Picture 1 (cartoon, one colour):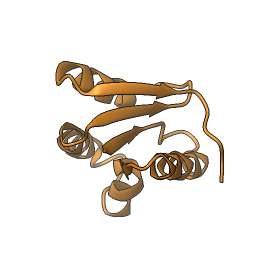
Picture 2 (cartoon, rainbow, N blue to C red):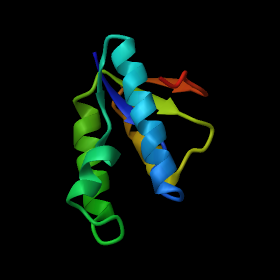
Picture 3 (tube, rainbow, N blue to C red):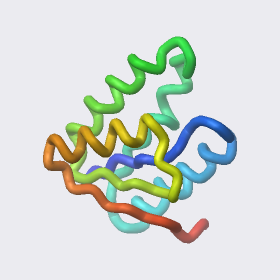
Length: 102
């Protein structure tokens, strides 16, 4: 399956990027292909200036995924939008509180 990785990006960006990498490795260990736009889009988009465009592109990718995997206990505004979109499109949502780091 292709799974969309839904996790915080803002606040402590460096820490959250490392956590997202762990979540992606978890998906791979489970035999899936992870999609984590917040690892890719900041490479060429500006978080402040291009936020709305990035969120729109996130949803385009999410629609093509089999499941939405939500990680952590903090749900940001962007994550809420992704969860709502997945609910609206009947995309299965799984919640993970913690995963093993490798």
